[in-house]
Image (cartoon, rainbow, N blue to C red; front, side, top):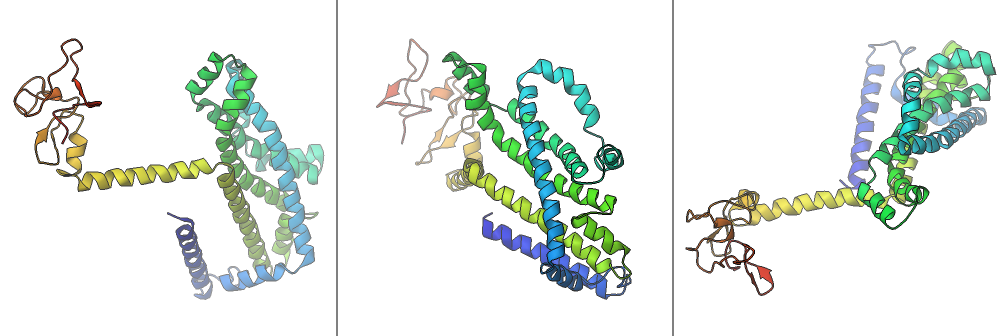
Length: 345
């Protein structure tokens, strides 16, 4: 599926969701003061784009998001490389990590607020804490998936542990780190908005939503703020996906090449004499037919059509078959090619 098809399907899904929300809002199933139509919410969200005070709130949220995510990367990536490279350290701290990881970051907001006070420090701390885990575990997992043959090759040529890490392990782990970064980016935006929302004062997108919730007719503003939060998440994810494709083009190319190879194999099997089943049987003892319709045996099969045990090398009753070499028991070579199951046609 190419980019245009993905964009078309994504737009179609968004239009369907918009239409469903619009229909529910106008059908009177829920009071319009509680759930305005989607068109009114979208119009209000567009109107907020010209409100400088609101844009300042968005900038404050994005600044805290970026700072917390950067600190999380600075902590999680080196720690993940250490845990993935030194099993002793991993075993020593695994219990502590597994204890801290399930703790919900939102539940820590009161505690961190008491320790650091309500402000940017609390917001950045919670964002950092929530964003560390996806990056950390993806880094450890990526190191475990590194090709051992590449590492053994560098060791054979005298490269040290640090050189192997920089030349092989880190480049191989980089796509996993980026995948964890994408997950952490969404989590960081959630924590930034939630921390502001629960604090109730200051600046930020969450503060705007919290203050709109207290207004007499603020449902539309609340939903418009939610639309902005979702749009920010969508844009951030799109940017990260684009950067990932630019940084690691071979990943998308490899997926496309695998799909093309599967398609070519299926097409070749369907157009070959005997169909795809003949190609699947070839090499597993099944007979295949050559261009003249003569039955030939696969390279690792058992007895041939004549009932001879040497069917994998061409039975003695087959025309043009090549007897095995007396010394090696393998088919003799003819014209630089190994005769497999009879003479090539």
